[in-house]
Length: 494
Image (cartoon, rainbow, N blue to C red):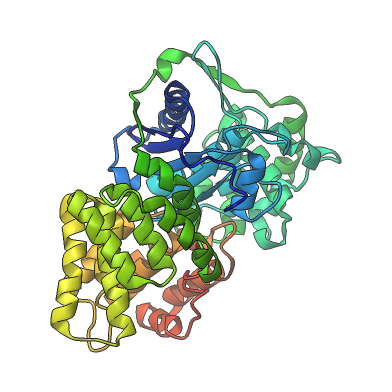
Protein backbone atom coordinates (compact mmCIF):
# COMPACT_ATOMS: atom_id res chain seq x y z
CA UNK A 1 0.00 0.00 0.00
CA UNK A 2 2.97 2.34 0.51
CA UNK A 3 3.48 2.08 -3.26
CA UNK A 4 -0.11 2.98 -4.07
CA UNK A 5 0.11 6.23 -6.07
CA UNK A 6 -3.25 7.73 -5.13
CA UNK A 7 -3.41 10.42 -2.48
CA UNK A 8 -6.13 9.54 0.01
CA UNK A 9 -7.41 13.11 0.10
CA UNK A 10 -7.61 13.48 -3.68
CA UNK A 11 -10.78 14.89 -5.19
CA UNK A 12 -12.74 11.67 -5.60
CA UNK A 13 -16.04 11.53 -7.49
CA UNK A 14 -18.72 8.91 -7.97
CA UNK A 15 -20.67 8.66 -11.23
CA UNK A 16 -23.82 6.55 -11.46
CA UNK A 17 -25.70 5.35 -14.51
CA UNK A 18 -28.17 2.55 -15.16
CA UNK A 19 -25.53 -0.20 -15.30
CA UNK A 20 -22.34 1.24 -13.77
CA UNK A 21 -20.95 2.96 -10.71
CA UNK A 22 -17.61 4.66 -11.33
CA UNK A 23 -15.16 5.94 -8.70
CA UNK A 24 -12.27 8.08 -9.86
CA UNK A 25 -9.91 10.69 -8.45
CA UNK A 26 -10.56 12.97 -11.40
CA UNK A 27 -12.56 16.06 -12.26
CA UNK A 28 -16.33 15.66 -12.13
CA UNK A 29 -16.83 16.30 -15.85
CA UNK A 30 -14.14 13.77 -16.84
CA UNK A 31 -15.65 11.11 -14.56
CA UNK A 32 -19.07 11.83 -16.07
CA UNK A 33 -17.76 11.47 -19.63
CA UNK A 34 -16.08 8.17 -18.79
CA UNK A 35 -19.27 6.79 -17.21
CA UNK A 36 -21.30 7.97 -20.19
CA UNK A 37 -19.03 6.04 -22.60
CA UNK A 38 -19.48 2.90 -20.51
CA UNK A 39 -23.24 3.31 -20.51
CA UNK A 40 -23.32 3.96 -24.25
CA UNK A 41 -21.20 0.84 -24.73
CA UNK A 42 -23.82 -1.16 -22.81
CA UNK A 43 -26.51 0.45 -24.98
CA UNK A 44 -24.58 -0.57 -28.10
CA UNK A 45 -24.46 -4.19 -26.96
CA UNK A 46 -28.17 -4.11 -26.24
CA UNK A 47 -28.98 -2.53 -29.60
CA UNK A 48 -27.07 -5.16 -31.54
CA UNK A 49 -28.24 -8.14 -29.47
CA UNK A 50 -31.83 -6.91 -29.02
CA UNK A 51 -31.58 -7.10 -25.21
CA UNK A 52 -33.99 -4.62 -23.55
CA UNK A 53 -32.36 -1.59 -21.94
CA UNK A 54 -33.67 -1.76 -18.38
CA UNK A 55 -32.02 -0.26 -15.29
CA UNK A 56 -30.77 -2.67 -12.67
CA UNK A 57 -30.49 -2.35 -8.90
CA UNK A 58 -27.31 -0.61 -7.65
CA UNK A 59 -25.81 -3.77 -6.06
CA UNK A 60 -25.83 -5.50 -9.46
CA UNK A 61 -24.14 -2.70 -11.40
CA UNK A 62 -20.48 -3.10 -12.27
CA UNK A 63 -18.36 -0.93 -9.99
CA UNK A 64 -15.39 0.56 -11.82
CA UNK A 65 -12.40 2.00 -9.97
CA UNK A 66 -10.50 4.31 -12.32
CA UNK A 67 -7.29 5.62 -10.82
CA UNK A 68 -3.52 5.51 -11.00
CA UNK A 69 -1.54 4.34 -14.01
CA UNK A 70 -0.93 1.00 -15.68
CA UNK A 71 1.94 0.07 -13.39
CA UNK A 72 -0.17 0.59 -10.26
CA UNK A 73 -3.04 -1.40 -11.74
CA UNK A 74 -0.59 -4.20 -12.59
CA UNK A 75 0.60 -4.25 -8.98
CA UNK A 76 -2.99 -4.34 -7.79
CA UNK A 77 -3.66 -7.26 -10.15
CA UNK A 78 -0.48 -8.97 -8.93
CA UNK A 79 0.47 -9.52 -12.55
CA UNK A 80 2.74 -7.81 -15.05
CA UNK A 81 1.58 -6.44 -18.40
CA UNK A 82 -1.98 -5.80 -17.22
CA UNK A 83 -3.91 -2.76 -18.46
CA UNK A 84 -7.00 -3.44 -16.37
CA UNK A 85 -8.96 -6.33 -14.92
CA UNK A 86 -12.43 -7.43 -13.83
CA UNK A 87 -13.67 -9.73 -11.06
CA UNK A 88 -17.21 -11.16 -11.40
CA UNK A 89 -19.09 -11.36 -8.12
CA UNK A 90 -22.73 -11.52 -7.17
CA UNK A 91 -23.75 -8.15 -5.81
CA UNK A 92 -20.35 -6.61 -6.36
CA UNK A 93 -18.66 -7.22 -9.71
CA UNK A 94 -15.68 -4.88 -9.89
CA UNK A 95 -13.30 -3.59 -12.54
CA UNK A 96 -10.03 -1.72 -12.10
CA UNK A 97 -8.61 0.48 -14.87
CA UNK A 98 -5.91 3.16 -14.91
CA UNK A 99 -6.69 6.82 -15.28
CA UNK A 100 -3.57 7.33 -17.39
CA UNK A 101 -0.75 5.49 -19.07
CA UNK A 102 -0.14 3.11 -21.96
CA UNK A 103 2.55 0.80 -23.22
CA UNK A 104 1.01 -2.68 -23.08
CA UNK A 105 -0.17 -2.58 -26.70
CA UNK A 106 -3.82 -2.48 -25.62
CA UNK A 107 -5.90 0.47 -24.52
CA UNK A 108 -7.25 0.11 -20.94
CA UNK A 109 -10.71 0.94 -22.21
CA UNK A 110 -10.49 -1.99 -24.64
CA UNK A 111 -9.72 -4.27 -21.71
CA UNK A 112 -12.75 -2.95 -19.87
CA UNK A 113 -15.00 -3.35 -22.91
CA UNK A 114 -13.77 -6.94 -23.38
CA UNK A 115 -14.44 -7.82 -19.76
CA UNK A 116 -17.78 -6.04 -19.61
CA UNK A 117 -18.89 -8.00 -22.67
CA UNK A 118 -18.22 -11.19 -20.67
CA UNK A 119 -20.31 -9.72 -17.84
CA UNK A 120 -23.06 -8.81 -20.31
CA UNK A 121 -23.13 -12.34 -21.77
CA UNK A 122 -23.33 -14.02 -18.36
CA UNK A 123 -25.97 -11.58 -17.12
CA UNK A 124 -28.26 -11.77 -20.14
CA UNK A 125 -27.72 -15.34 -21.37
CA UNK A 126 -27.33 -16.86 -17.92
CA UNK A 127 -27.84 -20.48 -18.99
CA UNK A 128 -26.29 -20.38 -22.45
CA UNK A 129 -23.31 -22.74 -22.71
CA UNK A 130 -21.21 -20.93 -25.30
CA UNK A 131 -17.95 -22.60 -26.45
CA UNK A 132 -14.73 -21.00 -25.24
CA UNK A 133 -13.73 -19.68 -28.68
CA UNK A 134 -17.04 -17.81 -28.98
CA UNK A 135 -16.97 -16.47 -25.43
CA UNK A 136 -13.60 -14.86 -26.10
CA UNK A 137 -14.32 -14.10 -29.75
CA UNK A 138 -17.51 -12.22 -28.91
CA UNK A 139 -15.69 -10.18 -26.26
CA UNK A 140 -12.88 -9.39 -28.71
CA UNK A 141 -15.45 -8.42 -31.36
CA UNK A 142 -16.63 -5.56 -29.14
CA UNK A 143 -13.43 -4.70 -27.26
CA UNK A 144 -12.05 -2.26 -29.90
CA UNK A 145 -15.31 -0.25 -30.01
CA UNK A 146 -14.41 3.40 -30.50
CA UNK A 147 -16.41 6.52 -29.65
CA UNK A 148 -15.84 9.36 -32.09
CA UNK A 149 -15.83 13.04 -31.20
CA UNK A 150 -19.04 13.55 -33.19
CA UNK A 151 -20.87 10.98 -31.04
CA UNK A 152 -20.87 8.17 -33.60
CA UNK A 153 -19.57 4.71 -32.64
CA UNK A 154 -17.25 2.40 -34.56
CA UNK A 155 -17.98 -1.30 -34.01
CA UNK A 156 -16.45 -4.56 -35.26
CA UNK A 157 -13.01 -2.95 -35.52
CA UNK A 158 -9.88 -5.08 -35.82
CA UNK A 159 -8.18 -5.58 -32.42
CA UNK A 160 -4.71 -4.47 -33.52
CA UNK A 161 -3.17 -5.83 -30.32
CA UNK A 162 -3.84 -9.32 -31.78
CA UNK A 163 -1.87 -8.62 -34.97
CA UNK A 164 1.19 -10.62 -33.91
CA UNK A 165 -0.92 -13.80 -33.76
CA UNK A 166 -1.49 -13.45 -37.54
CA UNK A 167 2.16 -12.84 -38.47
CA UNK A 168 2.54 -16.36 -39.89
CA UNK A 169 -0.99 -16.94 -41.12
CA UNK A 170 -4.04 -18.03 -39.15
CA UNK A 171 -3.22 -18.70 -35.49
CA UNK A 172 -5.69 -21.61 -35.43
CA UNK A 173 -8.10 -23.08 -37.96
CA UNK A 174 -11.87 -22.83 -37.71
CA UNK A 175 -12.18 -26.63 -37.68
CA UNK A 176 -9.82 -26.86 -34.69
CA UNK A 177 -11.82 -24.25 -32.79
CA UNK A 178 -15.08 -26.03 -33.54
CA UNK A 179 -14.09 -29.63 -33.00
CA UNK A 180 -10.82 -29.63 -31.06
CA UNK A 181 -10.04 -29.46 -27.35
CA UNK A 182 -9.97 -25.76 -26.35
CA UNK A 183 -7.55 -26.55 -23.50
CA UNK A 184 -4.96 -27.56 -26.09
CA UNK A 185 -5.20 -24.25 -28.00
CA UNK A 186 -2.78 -21.62 -26.74
CA UNK A 187 -4.61 -18.71 -25.18
CA UNK A 188 -3.42 -16.00 -27.64
CA UNK A 189 -4.46 -18.23 -30.54
CA UNK A 190 -7.85 -18.90 -28.92
CA UNK A 191 -8.50 -15.17 -28.53
CA UNK A 192 -7.31 -14.20 -32.00
CA UNK A 193 -8.84 -17.14 -33.85
CA UNK A 194 -12.05 -16.88 -31.85
CA UNK A 195 -12.32 -13.20 -32.76
CA UNK A 196 -11.80 -13.83 -36.48
CA UNK A 197 -14.28 -16.71 -36.65
CA UNK A 198 -16.83 -14.75 -34.62
CA UNK A 199 -16.37 -11.67 -36.82
CA UNK A 200 -16.92 -13.71 -39.97
CA UNK A 201 -19.97 -15.55 -38.66
CA UNK A 202 -21.62 -12.36 -37.41
CA UNK A 203 -20.76 -10.07 -40.32
CA UNK A 204 -20.35 -12.14 -43.50
CA UNK A 205 -23.77 -12.41 -45.24
CA UNK A 206 -22.77 -15.77 -46.75
CA UNK A 207 -22.58 -17.27 -43.26
CA UNK A 208 -25.63 -15.61 -41.77
CA UNK A 209 -27.70 -17.80 -39.43
CA UNK A 210 -25.11 -20.57 -39.13
CA UNK A 211 -23.92 -19.54 -35.68
CA UNK A 212 -27.51 -19.63 -34.39
CA UNK A 213 -28.01 -23.19 -35.65
CA UNK A 214 -24.68 -24.25 -34.15
CA UNK A 215 -25.47 -22.75 -30.73
CA UNK A 216 -28.94 -24.28 -30.72
CA UNK A 217 -27.44 -27.72 -31.32
CA UNK A 218 -24.81 -27.23 -28.59
CA UNK A 219 -27.49 -26.07 -26.13
CA UNK A 220 -29.46 -29.22 -26.93
CA UNK A 221 -26.48 -31.31 -25.81
CA UNK A 222 -24.96 -32.24 -29.16
CA UNK A 223 -21.16 -32.61 -29.19
CA UNK A 224 -19.44 -29.64 -30.84
CA UNK A 225 -18.09 -31.84 -33.63
CA UNK A 226 -21.62 -32.86 -34.59
CA UNK A 227 -23.11 -29.39 -34.08
CA UNK A 228 -20.44 -28.01 -36.45
CA UNK A 229 -22.45 -29.53 -39.31
CA UNK A 230 -24.29 -26.18 -39.22
CA UNK A 231 -21.28 -24.68 -41.04
CA UNK A 232 -21.16 -27.24 -43.83
CA UNK A 233 -17.80 -28.46 -45.09
CA UNK A 234 -15.27 -27.46 -42.41
CA UNK A 235 -12.41 -27.45 -44.92
CA UNK A 236 -14.33 -24.84 -46.90
CA UNK A 237 -14.89 -22.93 -43.65
CA UNK A 238 -11.14 -22.95 -43.01
CA UNK A 239 -10.48 -21.56 -46.49
CA UNK A 240 -13.19 -18.93 -46.09
CA UNK A 241 -11.78 -17.80 -42.75
CA UNK A 242 -8.31 -17.44 -44.25
CA UNK A 243 -9.72 -15.44 -47.15
CA UNK A 244 -11.85 -13.35 -44.78
CA UNK A 245 -8.76 -12.36 -42.77
CA UNK A 246 -7.18 -10.97 -45.95
CA UNK A 247 -10.13 -9.32 -47.67
CA UNK A 248 -13.34 -9.44 -45.66
CA UNK A 249 -12.74 -7.44 -42.51
CA UNK A 250 -14.92 -4.37 -42.24
CA UNK A 251 -16.15 -2.23 -39.38
CA UNK A 252 -19.38 -0.30 -39.10
CA UNK A 253 -20.28 3.15 -37.83
CA UNK A 254 -23.39 3.73 -35.75
CA UNK A 255 -24.64 7.33 -35.93
CA UNK A 256 -25.02 9.15 -32.63
CA UNK A 257 -28.82 9.05 -32.89
CA UNK A 258 -28.82 5.24 -32.70
CA UNK A 259 -27.09 5.28 -29.29
CA UNK A 260 -27.87 8.69 -27.78
CA UNK A 261 -26.36 10.23 -24.67
CA UNK A 262 -27.52 8.79 -21.35
CA UNK A 263 -28.18 10.17 -17.91
CA UNK A 264 -25.21 10.14 -15.52
CA UNK A 265 -25.27 11.62 -12.03
CA UNK A 266 -22.04 12.69 -10.34
CA UNK A 267 -21.26 13.58 -6.75
CA UNK A 268 -18.12 14.37 -4.80
CA UNK A 269 -17.25 11.77 -2.18
CA UNK A 270 -17.37 12.73 1.47
CA UNK A 271 -14.02 13.32 3.22
CA UNK A 272 -14.40 9.96 4.97
CA UNK A 273 -15.08 8.14 1.70
CA UNK A 274 -12.09 9.79 0.01
CA UNK A 275 -9.77 9.06 2.95
CA UNK A 276 -10.64 5.36 2.97
CA UNK A 277 -10.70 4.89 -0.82
CA UNK A 278 -7.17 3.39 -1.11
CA UNK A 279 -8.08 0.78 1.53
CA UNK A 280 -11.44 0.17 -0.14
CA UNK A 281 -9.82 -0.45 -3.53
CA UNK A 282 -7.42 -2.96 -2.01
CA UNK A 283 -10.18 -4.78 -0.14
CA UNK A 284 -12.38 -4.98 -3.22
CA UNK A 285 -9.48 -6.47 -5.16
CA UNK A 286 -9.45 -9.28 -2.62
CA UNK A 287 -6.88 -10.11 0.02
CA UNK A 288 -5.41 -13.19 1.58
CA UNK A 289 -4.65 -13.42 5.30
CA UNK A 290 -1.19 -11.81 5.05
CA UNK A 291 -2.43 -8.99 2.83
CA UNK A 292 -5.41 -8.36 5.11
CA UNK A 293 -3.14 -7.91 8.12
CA UNK A 294 -0.95 -5.49 6.15
CA UNK A 295 -3.97 -3.50 5.01
CA UNK A 296 -5.72 -3.31 8.39
CA UNK A 297 -3.66 -0.50 10.03
CA UNK A 298 -4.04 1.62 6.89
CA UNK A 299 -7.83 1.21 6.99
CA UNK A 300 -7.88 1.89 10.74
CA UNK A 301 -5.89 5.12 10.40
CA UNK A 302 -7.98 6.31 7.46
CA UNK A 303 -11.34 5.62 9.15
CA UNK A 304 -10.45 6.79 12.67
CA UNK A 305 -11.25 10.50 12.09
CA UNK A 306 -14.67 9.59 10.65
CA UNK A 307 -16.59 7.50 13.21
CA UNK A 308 -19.85 9.02 11.96
CA UNK A 309 -19.24 8.44 8.25
CA UNK A 310 -21.13 5.22 7.34
CA UNK A 311 -19.12 4.48 4.20
CA UNK A 312 -15.80 4.90 5.99
CA UNK A 313 -16.97 2.59 8.77
CA UNK A 314 -18.08 -0.05 6.24
CA UNK A 315 -14.57 0.03 4.74
CA UNK A 316 -13.18 -0.48 8.24
CA UNK A 317 -15.65 -3.28 8.96
CA UNK A 318 -14.54 -5.10 5.80
CA UNK A 319 -10.85 -4.68 6.67
CA UNK A 320 -11.38 -5.90 10.26
CA UNK A 321 -13.41 -8.86 9.01
CA UNK A 322 -10.78 -9.85 6.44
CA UNK A 323 -8.13 -9.71 9.15
CA UNK A 324 -10.16 -11.99 11.41
CA UNK A 325 -11.08 -9.31 13.97
CA UNK A 326 -14.76 -10.15 14.01
CA UNK A 327 -15.76 -8.24 17.15
CA UNK A 328 -14.09 -5.09 15.79
CA UNK A 329 -15.81 -5.65 12.44
CA UNK A 330 -19.17 -5.90 14.22
CA UNK A 331 -18.48 -2.68 16.12
CA UNK A 332 -17.60 -0.80 12.92
CA UNK A 333 -20.72 -2.14 11.19
CA UNK A 334 -22.86 -0.97 14.11
CA UNK A 335 -21.35 2.51 13.88
CA UNK A 336 -22.20 2.59 10.18
CA UNK A 337 -25.79 1.53 10.88
CA UNK A 338 -26.11 4.14 13.63
CA UNK A 339 -25.04 6.79 11.12
CA UNK A 340 -27.22 5.45 8.29
CA UNK A 341 -29.66 2.61 8.92
CA UNK A 342 -30.09 2.17 5.14
CA UNK A 343 -26.47 1.07 4.58
CA UNK A 344 -26.96 -2.40 3.11
CA UNK A 345 -23.28 -3.33 3.36
CA UNK A 346 -23.23 -2.37 7.03
CA UNK A 347 -26.01 -4.88 7.76
CA UNK A 348 -24.19 -7.47 5.65
CA UNK A 349 -20.93 -7.08 7.60
CA UNK A 350 -22.81 -7.04 10.88
CA UNK A 351 -24.32 -10.43 10.05
CA UNK A 352 -21.06 -11.80 8.65
CA UNK A 353 -19.11 -10.76 11.75
CA UNK A 354 -21.73 -12.26 14.06
CA UNK A 355 -21.81 -15.46 12.01
CA UNK A 356 -18.00 -15.78 12.13
CA UNK A 357 -17.99 -15.33 15.91
CA UNK A 358 -20.71 -17.95 16.41
CA UNK A 359 -18.89 -20.44 14.21
CA UNK A 360 -15.59 -19.82 16.00
CA UNK A 361 -17.37 -20.54 19.29
CA UNK A 362 -19.04 -23.63 17.75
CA UNK A 363 -22.32 -22.18 18.95
CA UNK A 364 -25.28 -23.88 17.25
CA UNK A 365 -27.93 -22.28 19.47
CA UNK A 366 -30.91 -21.71 17.20
CA UNK A 367 -31.89 -18.44 18.91
CA UNK A 368 -28.45 -16.96 18.33
CA UNK A 369 -28.61 -17.88 14.66
CA UNK A 370 -32.08 -16.41 14.31
CA UNK A 371 -30.63 -13.17 15.63
CA UNK A 372 -27.77 -13.33 13.11
CA UNK A 373 -30.20 -13.80 10.24
CA UNK A 374 -31.97 -10.57 11.21
CA UNK A 375 -29.04 -8.62 9.78
CA UNK A 376 -29.39 -10.32 6.39
CA UNK A 377 -33.17 -9.91 6.45
CA UNK A 378 -32.74 -6.21 7.22
CA UNK A 379 -30.36 -5.83 4.28
CA UNK A 380 -32.84 -7.65 2.05
CA UNK A 381 -35.66 -5.33 3.09
CA UNK A 382 -33.55 -2.30 2.19
CA UNK A 383 -32.51 -3.71 -1.19
CA UNK A 384 -34.56 -6.67 -2.32
CA UNK A 385 -32.44 -7.23 -5.43
CA UNK A 386 -29.06 -7.52 -3.71
CA UNK A 387 -27.89 -11.16 -4.04
CA UNK A 388 -25.36 -11.04 -1.19
CA UNK A 389 -27.82 -10.95 1.75
CA UNK A 390 -29.81 -13.75 0.11
CA UNK A 391 -26.71 -15.88 -0.29
CA UNK A 392 -25.60 -15.23 3.30
CA UNK A 393 -29.07 -16.05 4.60
CA UNK A 394 -28.69 -19.48 2.97
CA UNK A 395 -25.16 -19.88 4.32
CA UNK A 396 -26.37 -19.15 7.86
CA UNK A 397 -28.13 -22.52 7.88
CA UNK A 398 -24.95 -24.48 7.19
CA UNK A 399 -24.12 -25.01 10.86
CA UNK A 400 -24.20 -28.14 13.07
CA UNK A 401 -27.70 -29.46 13.54
CA UNK A 402 -29.42 -27.40 10.83
CA UNK A 403 -30.11 -27.76 7.15
CA UNK A 404 -31.22 -25.04 4.73
CA UNK A 405 -35.00 -24.97 4.59
CA UNK A 406 -37.08 -24.26 1.50
CA UNK A 407 -37.02 -20.52 2.22
CA UNK A 408 -33.22 -20.56 2.40
CA UNK A 409 -32.93 -22.58 -0.81
CA UNK A 410 -35.27 -20.19 -2.59
CA UNK A 411 -33.13 -17.30 -1.35
CA UNK A 412 -30.00 -18.86 -2.82
CA UNK A 413 -31.64 -19.55 -6.17
CA UNK A 414 -32.91 -15.98 -6.24
CA UNK A 415 -29.36 -14.78 -5.50
CA UNK A 416 -28.10 -16.78 -8.48
CA UNK A 417 -30.76 -15.25 -10.72
CA UNK A 418 -29.57 -11.79 -9.65
CA UNK A 419 -25.85 -12.60 -9.93
CA UNK A 420 -25.39 -15.29 -12.61
CA UNK A 421 -21.85 -14.11 -13.38
CA UNK A 422 -20.60 -15.39 -10.01
CA UNK A 423 -19.17 -18.87 -10.62
CA UNK A 424 -19.14 -19.93 -6.96
CA UNK A 425 -22.76 -18.91 -6.52
CA UNK A 426 -23.68 -20.68 -9.75
CA UNK A 427 -22.16 -23.90 -8.41
CA UNK A 428 -24.04 -23.51 -5.12
CA UNK A 429 -27.28 -23.03 -7.04
CA UNK A 430 -26.63 -26.14 -9.13
CA UNK A 431 -26.11 -28.18 -5.98
CA UNK A 432 -29.38 -26.94 -4.47
CA UNK A 433 -31.16 -27.91 -7.70
CA UNK A 434 -29.65 -31.39 -7.55
CA UNK A 435 -30.65 -31.73 -3.89
CA UNK A 436 -34.24 -30.95 -4.88
CA UNK A 437 -34.15 -33.39 -7.84
CA UNK A 438 -34.27 -30.68 -10.51
CA UNK A 439 -31.66 -32.26 -12.74
CA UNK A 440 -32.57 -30.45 -15.97
CA UNK A 441 -32.29 -27.04 -14.30
CA UNK A 442 -29.03 -28.02 -12.62
CA UNK A 443 -27.62 -29.07 -15.98
CA UNK A 444 -28.47 -25.69 -17.53
CA UNK A 445 -26.91 -23.82 -14.60
CA UNK A 446 -23.71 -25.91 -14.86
CA UNK A 447 -23.36 -25.37 -18.61
CA UNK A 448 -21.66 -21.94 -18.61
CA UNK A 449 -19.20 -23.15 -15.96
CA UNK A 450 -18.31 -26.24 -17.99
CA UNK A 451 -17.60 -24.09 -21.06
CA UNK A 452 -15.78 -21.27 -19.20
CA UNK A 453 -12.51 -20.48 -21.06
CA UNK A 454 -10.48 -20.17 -17.84
CA UNK A 455 -12.57 -22.40 -15.61
CA UNK A 456 -9.82 -24.78 -14.56
CA UNK A 457 -10.76 -27.55 -12.14
CA UNK A 458 -14.24 -26.13 -11.62
CA UNK A 459 -15.03 -26.22 -15.35
CA UNK A 460 -13.83 -29.83 -15.63
CA UNK A 461 -15.89 -30.79 -12.59
CA UNK A 462 -19.01 -29.09 -13.98
CA UNK A 463 -18.57 -30.96 -17.28
CA UNK A 464 -18.21 -34.23 -15.37
CA UNK A 465 -21.40 -33.52 -13.42
CA UNK A 466 -23.30 -32.79 -16.63
CA UNK A 467 -22.17 -36.13 -18.05
CA UNK A 468 -23.31 -37.93 -14.87
CA UNK A 469 -26.69 -36.15 -14.94
CA UNK A 470 -27.18 -37.22 -18.55
CA UNK A 471 -26.18 -40.80 -17.82
CA UNK A 472 -27.39 -41.52 -14.28
CA UNK A 473 -29.52 -38.64 -13.02
CA UNK A 474 -29.46 -36.11 -10.17
CA UNK A 475 -28.79 -38.51 -7.29
CA UNK A 476 -25.62 -39.87 -8.88
CA UNK A 477 -24.37 -36.38 -9.69
CA UNK A 478 -25.02 -35.28 -6.11
CA UNK A 479 -23.14 -38.30 -4.77
CA UNK A 480 -20.16 -37.40 -6.96
CA UNK A 481 -20.37 -33.80 -5.77
CA UNK A 482 -20.05 -34.81 -2.14
CA UNK A 483 -16.69 -36.32 -2.98
CA UNK A 484 -15.41 -33.30 -4.92
CA UNK A 485 -12.77 -30.81 -3.74
CA UNK A 486 -13.41 -27.19 -2.85
CA UNK A 487 -11.48 -26.07 -5.94
CA UNK A 488 -13.72 -28.18 -8.16
CA UNK A 489 -16.84 -26.73 -6.55
CA UNK A 490 -15.86 -23.16 -7.37
CA UNK A 491 -14.59 -22.14 -3.97
CA UNK A 492 -11.21 -21.13 -5.36
CA UNK A 493 -12.61 -17.93 -6.86
CA UNK A 494 -11.45 -14.48 -5.80
